[in-house]
Image (tube, rainbow, N blue to C red; front, side):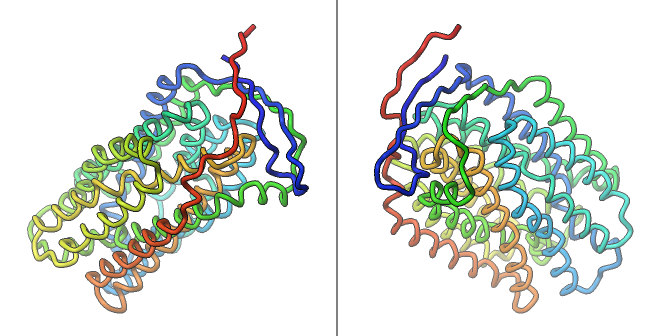
Length: 429
């Protein structure tokens, strides 16, 4: 169907409201698109998370053996790709608004597939660091799929749809570490990189064959960067929250394998490390869609505040864990609440961003997430090197508490945007 609507041009600096007439071709079967993107997101995250459990162990095979140096190399190599990701995500978002989201999905999947395959050929940590940096240029598959799904989904179902889409990434993150631990012992570390590259390219083929992006026509005049920034200004609290939430969640992730090593001395360390990473992902499968549906009912800001406070509490048993059972329980409880955070932020982007700047807004929000991915591991690995790994849990708890307080003060996020004021369905030709 074609939905025709009018909205205020928020990019104008003058006081008189200017109305923009817009037509948008909406994909009626948004659920079909959701299924396809779920499968492709699963393939991408499963592939990328195959390497997470043994990344510090792989770095150790490249000649890094001293514990403090290994902490710093693990954090740096994990985080370095987010440097270029932060820079390029808004650029890819602007290109998606102009050329479409599907080409951007293909760019990300194929590019990351090739670079990840090359990681299996490195002989030094500096080479691995450089390839991770280049990989960040091509990143953005998940964020662009979120943007595509958001553009095809009715607003009243956004929380449900984006929460469900998130479970695709979560399921991949769940299966990937478990399988990666076993594969690293059978194929070897390098073989897992080759398999990861193949999965990323497979996800691109799924998108190429099965995803059909809805056409969209708009009739506003072209905008300068200044007017775009002005139009996106109401989203600033969302971008800040995305940075700080992701940074808080990622402080422990790159070194959780090393933490597990301090309390587990049995056989098959790579497998146990994969289980630690995957446990929170398993709980995400329950938490993400549940919190997504709840956010459609009570609002995204409230869900974010609840999830942040509860996630902070779940770090307590992890910080005091002396055996794997307590650590796994803490990771499972954490997973119930972290799954709904990013989807809730994405729904706020959809609600608050002007229709003609949706992909740019999602690109900037993705950059914010990547910036958090950069800050978090660097902060966590350095705190661990200077003090102890257990100290990282307490730092993370403080960051989550500050986020909850910040979002509590941002009550403007509960207000609905002044759009879709006049909507009618027109027959298609």
